[in-house]
Image (cartoon, rainbow, N blue to C red; front, side):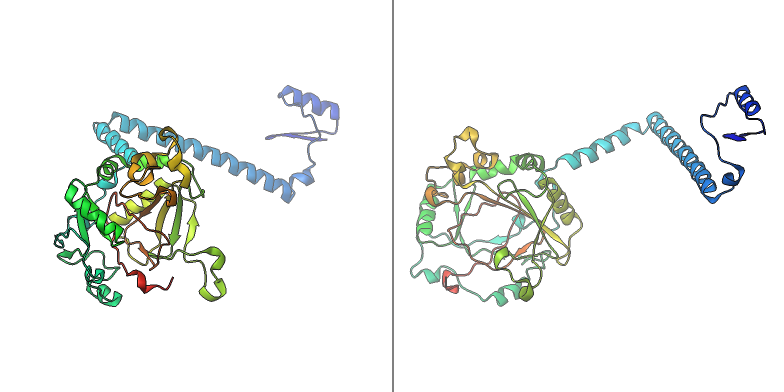
Length: 362
């Protein structure tokens, strides 16, 4: 009979003697151990080698823990501990929240020297004289849509600008609105207020749910470059047009904002993947009590209320607020919207190229 326990092998022709010997060294096998032939088998050698590697791995883990503990003790006793702690806190804060205003792009379009048109209290007659039209090719030859680092040295505005604080200018703005001519409003209090309030964390809390979500709570889309073409999935023919131009991405708002921040820091090029976050306020939310409305509706009452305002002048036909968050260089394909839009720029800058309504036959 042969008994084996770790490195103790007891061999005897007498089973009783073997059991007694095992007891003498505190080994009492509960089952019969393999024969010498089995001990020399490949299966046994493999199991033994595997057990040895497992022990070596455990030793490495213990050694790694000891090394990390020593490093931690060294850092804790270092005179530079305060600087290290401050750096860790800074990184943690940067990852948990930051302000869009803290991100400084290479070119800040809001501070460019700008030439404004002369103020007009009434829309011109005929209306075609309001803006001098140019071809799209001519406009892009002056300033290519992808050359965002080199805008014109003096940007020339062609739309009328009206100050919300000036009653005379807002009276003129009303006339332009009724004539369905494009214009711009400046110094709207709730937009100035939102500029100070809308940090990344604040907006992330609005869109709390993670992953692919319904449009009411936010959605991130991606494109292989900076060009975004919005389309109807059911009408997109892959055999003719190829793959979908944009795809939904499993990102929450903070993940999008982090990428947008890095895009500005690293000067993301037009041929790199770009991301676009969009959300909508429920169409009927404007009829809810203010206490039951979402943060966007409460922050932008002029655009979301049930009572007519200068911007939301026909609440019954309003389809709700649509929020768009675009990172550096995002370009949307030429398109038309079915309704009358009032666009509020809260932060950043966006270049619009407008075409007259008679350019489309719909």
